[in-house]
Every structure is written in C-alpha cells, then in structure tokens.
Image 1: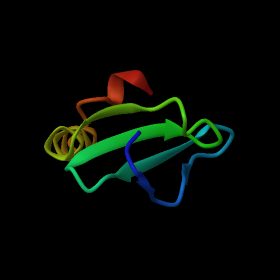
Image 2: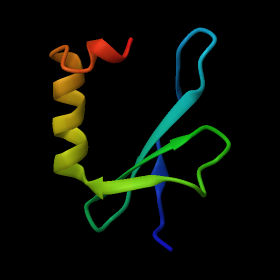
Image 3: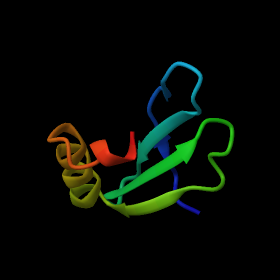
Length: 63
C-alpha cells in the first residue's frame, strides 16, 4: 500500500469532509474523512484537471 500524505480535510456545512492526498510516485488520492482506507486514486495531473474543471463551474449541475 502506498504511503499517502493526506492534506487537512475540506468540509462544507452539513456535508461530509473530503481529504486529498499524494504519494511519492505521483499519484493523487481522494477519500471521505475517517475512511481514508477506501480512497479513489489517479495521477496528480488528473486531480489537478478535476480541480480546474470544478473551479470553472463544470460541476455546478451537481449542486
């Protein structure tokens, strides 16, 4: 299992808290706070693009 360096959780009001993490091999991870053993993973570039897309409003339909 990869050694994941988790960031502080990102929490919205009344919502689950999410954590982002990276490892030394260039992978990125997303997990729900308290469930870090059940994560999604992809390359850092994919995570960076997802964050850019969210900031650009491409996920606003999910709100």
